[in-house]
Amino acid sequence: MGYAQTALDTYILDQMDTKHIPGVSSVIIQDGRLVWSGNYGTANLTTGMAVDTNTVFMLASISKTIAVTAAMQLYEDGYFELDDDINMHLPFTIYHPDYPDSVITMRMIMTHSSALRDNWDILDTVYVAGDSPLPLSAFVQGYFEVGGPYYYADDNFYGYAPGVNYNYCNMGISLLGYLVELFSGQPFNTYCNEHIFEPMCMTNTGWFLSELDTNLIAHPYDYVAGEYVDYGLYGYPDYPDGQLRTTALSLAKFLYMYMQGGSFEGVQILEPETVDLILSSQIPMIDPTQGLVWYSYTDGGTWWGHSGGDSGVSTDMYFKESTQTGVILLTNSDNSTLNIWNEIVAYADTVNSDNSPALTCEIILPVNIDESDILEVHIQPNPASDWIYLQTKETIASYSISNIHGEIEQSGVLQNASINISNLVSGLHYIELQGPSSGKRNIQAFVKL
Image 1: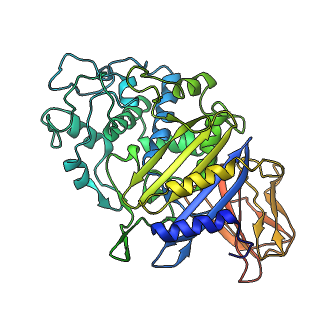
Image 2 (image 1 turned 120 degrees about the vertical axis):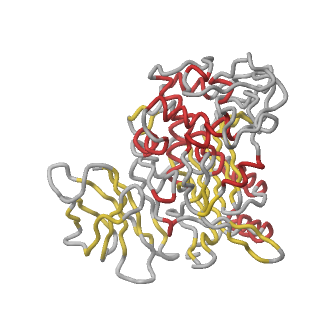
Image 3 (image 1 turned 90 degrees about the vertical axis):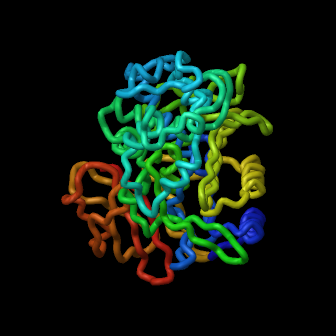
């Protein structure tokens, strides 16, 4: 690994071997600082690409927390109330076939109490290699409107009335994503890019493969008969319920925003009272742990967050209210990660935030080169010029600059420890620096111009 292996490292690696988990990326945040990060194993078994801070993982159902964030931004703008009938906002009508007079509300679809049901005889068939060509709007309408190509009265709804019971429903959150499109007048992914990812400097984040550098994405794996099976990079039309891909560091910014009452680096993504609403019991007589998409559990205190699972994917993201400690665990396997999660959570109780890097747009991480040499990079844009100046503890030979989707915009050799940025547009950029020795790891930082 190039550094002394800790007891936590050893435990995680042993569990990965036992559970046949190819790759893991995890972070602990506390008091607004990144107090620990760990990257282990392999992102792509075919190429041998190792997991590092730039590895992009599919989030599965953690994606739903982004979907509700987008929806609640529009709630703040007055587009809907939580107890609105969803049909007030749809161009077609959704009703329960056995309870046609019952109202399905916005709150119900965000708390899995709507009686809407995942029909896996349909959902399994719409997984495709790459991005789905079927638009979200067409799939949602075709699934819920009577006579639609994916509509089955007996299988797309539970046998009880809306608002009576709890059953987890992916399609309810896909419907919520479609409502975001209707309210905002934008494609769901575009809305999230402009109103969540870019303001929060969530680099290498996207709903579609077409938005990302696929070379950075961890491939999802199963383990069958002693061999790893690559599911490939897949997609589906109901994508707001699980298809977001990002890095552990970018997701840490999102989690921290919730821990900070909706604010990140002075940008108010959500108002504090909206965050309090999301992170509060919404259906106490049915399930007191359920907030708006987010839910809670108790383990030495109350934790709020979400987990995720899909083919070759297992993820967790929660924070503990009493200690303001957040933990994220991303893997490219659908095998059990419970032991790893518990060990990292236990470790989180032993660390503190002293001397840890702050969670900002520019997370400047010391990068271990070998056991004796640590290279640090600090990037400072100068608003009065077209140059970025760098201070480093070692000579840097070359650089590349990419946009938020990982597409290279500019590259070259450093001139006097500076980079000319006159050709870059305003926005978030990802800067990668390479030392002169081929054996040295790349250094990454972010800058918002």
